[in-house]
Image 1 (cartoon, one colour):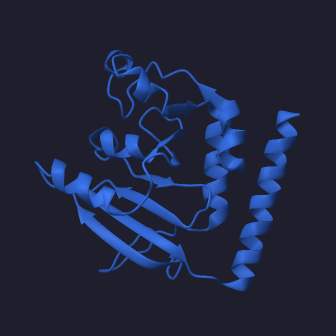
Image 2 (cartoon, helix red, strand yellow):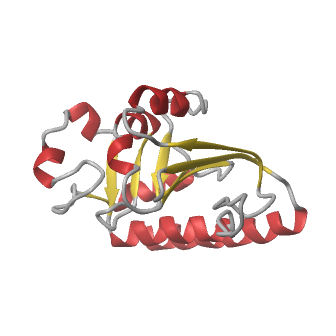
Length: 189
């Protein structure tokens, strides 16, 4: 685990008593212990930290036009799209797998239908994609901010990777992120 993951582990909470990407609370309770060990809903404070961390990256900038992307123009060197259709289970799982993110890598879901941020393994993203990608926009990323997966509510996935280095923007981003990480450390004392 990296510093962000270790610090956010302090904000784990029980599975929500409301609908989430795992569907109803009763259905969520029935998933295997192996999967429960890889899925961590975060409390209100943890959710705020995830949102602050993502916002400080300046990665998202909703634009308009025919070549719409949720990512700030020029933030990533590479962007890919996937259109979710009926009965695309094997295609989407293959697409997600081919993004090259290790199964055991912990990632963050910025918001879920439950209103909580989630820290989970990439393997669980692939396993439970249907619950994540169906209703509201959400962003999945890791602590490096070198890649992100954005679900747009019109059944589109956008994947960006390999940040474009801009010295001034990188300095500002690192300044904000270091400030946020220091705040997290101070809260835990």
